[in-house]
Image: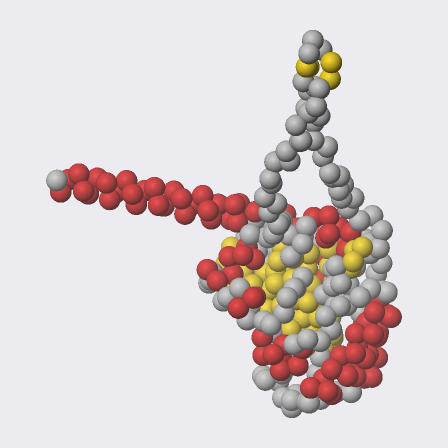
Length: 307
């Protein structure tokens, strides 16, 4: 009996491993050239998204954008400005390199709460390009716990500064900005606010629904320890929550991913009308004359709502 038990246990283990491999394969197969130096199972939903990208700054050093593109990178958010007087030293190089390689790219501004909004607007307009083919810009809002600007402003002050800067970015680029934030700042300031804007949320160890009191989002920063060909060391990886059609239409300005509204070219949905029941054949009575028919019986149908 013991050998038979061991044999069954071995076969069961092999079957279980095969099942787990099949379940994981679709996610891994999307981007086989990319990896993670410290993967976390809590973000597996993000890894399954078809449209993925990165965000970079000076800390990624010299980037080979052709290799980044070849690895399947669909978009990149590139740090441009911070506060009212800092320009990322690699921004212009990264901006030009991503475009040459054919990677869709957008610029982001890191907000300093100890600087007036008007100073930051002036700096943004001076350095963030108005390229018509660029992705919408990003306003990065977090508490600056590790910088010289550690003062926490009130919720009202933070929201007012954001309104000014979001409006300025929109006016400057002609595109509705994206809001990037983390768990703490969202809980302190952003719950229930700016619901018409696209959100890019950070969570590297759990599903977003476990970390944020928000019904929808558009981008998920799911790891800071990603590995992508063309970049030495770790890099942030991100996923877009939407279809290929929505991503393309968003880039063309035909689809607002924040409000989920179309501005033309929306998918045509054919609504099926009620199906007519077949007419029962006539019953011939007394040599062929039409006699009375029994009343038609409509079969009962259970309609299931689509999730």
